[in-house]
Length: 307
Image (tube, rainbow, N blue to C red; front, side):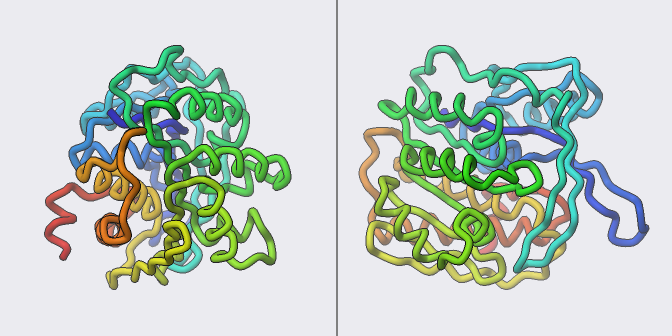
């Protein structure tokens, strides 16, 4: 089983036609990763806090409909957290402002007290990994490291985490614990102003993870496997929306690794060839998501048809 930890919320996305109108869409980066993995066919459980309000019921129902295990979700009577989305381009991505305090998100993080034996991978990320729940995430990573591989996507949201110094400390701690790290170009530029993205990626790859990836929007992605550098070209598609594209990349990467037996503490280190195949699969899935409104990750059949 793959555990995904992080926030579930409602994305308020501006209507492309009617000014001052927003469409309410189920979201949250880790939530999207859980949905994406389940749609591809992986066995997934979600660790999060979800409201009992109408929006929370929709969030939980969508997870269950795609087969995500909700055993580690804490339900709360307070309202669902919200994110207002400001559309970006394929190069810049979207921007977000959040309403979290006093919501269902604002409480103890419900990691299981004892690590379930069947967990072979834990994915953490977004602001729930580096904001008020950051220490709980670090402890969970440390507790699972002996049995599971770990992945981390900082998915920086400056409106939530304006204190760069404190966030950087948590990011680097989790990066060193992780087996796989994915970050966007924007994440790395915010964390290390004035430093080249590839310099950071190489430094991270030298610090402990098996490999590190930087997504570059319309320019594709680059990865470092030790000192080896891999380039992943972007797929050419008609972009409808960039919301969820990075999450789809993450979920499909983990699925490809799982399918190849590359998850779990005893899994062998990846070769350049295998990593290249995983990244190609992830790029195809991410491109499909960009052709859809909101975060709507593809099924396995969708990705396999996109050769």
